[in-house]
Length: 493
Image 1 (cartoon, helix red, strand yellow):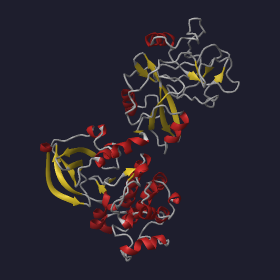
Image 2: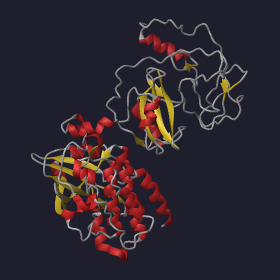
Image 3: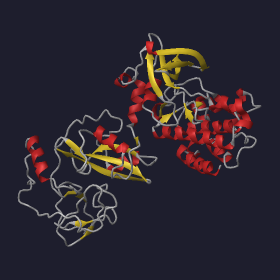
Image 4: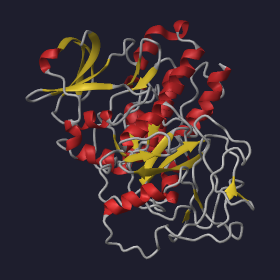
């Protein structure tokens, strides 16, 4: 068997297992008889001679005709005896690697022993575990490829093991999570009892990965299941606040489907959203969403005929009230671009999570004490696949034409609403389509009418509005693209 040497730029590297493919320049053939070995923690090896391990093909290696009925305990013991320190895996490409012994349809394990097969994984209910999907399917799901976006899948090359797929610099890196007895490890140095512990560790510290884990990509079905089954197990995971622990004070807002009150819980101010029905769908959805530009759900209070949603208190109120009350004298260009960028960041996250807000407007964006804008009011929000399943009383001036006419909602219809919200920001809270009667708005829009730029609107902002108002949804930009433009303008302002 011919082995290969490598220069490591980090403590360990992701493996690549496509059929007859290996990463460019990752392995080079050599005449030595030592396989590549991971250096000790904290050591970056520059030459192959610094760390070596002799290797020989031995007669005690497990034969290929091992009976399938062999007891799993025996397999476990064999795995511990035969696994070398680094347990690296390589894939053949053309004629660069000779005399490899292929143990599966696709790839080669230097140790020639598969990990014990685990059946019916206990992680199937976790949002980040996508089960038995291929490398290509994982890379297709991980979009937009923001640094730290990740998922976990079953290894297709090593049954019983897992693969951690992480986005970094527009690419997806794949790390094999190996079983070592009852433990799990990526680098043979840090060991974990389960995947939850492993993920939590790499969320706090990259520790040799290409980047820290930031956001998990949930399964597409998770949100829709939660919304359809308000009495499902997910609802039982909500933080339920005892009614006597919450003090409800004066009202601070009122909407079509709820009333918002000021409250006190654990000696802190909170907002209490009193729902007019007893559905927990909004709470279940909010529980699954975590972003700095989304209003955070703290818990719920279950009453006999009502549900209270307890959220963080946003002391400066809604964006539209903030703009109107302070006006041009107190709201600067920097404030405006910050509000636009923050809102777009929150919407980009919803887009990535396949959630359609359906009611995006300046009245549903709240301002925190530090001036950060956060998207709120998820009462009409739906999973992208279910966004057309029901109708509701819609805000005509903020809703895209295909949503008004065909009840067809998507992240692109949210983008139309974001264009209206931008107009609100730069008009300091004016009502859209001024001087046009509400009954005539739809007819004007269908005839191609677009609002003019508000007075004083930066020349770079108005084209974003017009693109968002394209009559054809597929021609509108997505939130990731708009966020990049707004980030550049934010730096210039």
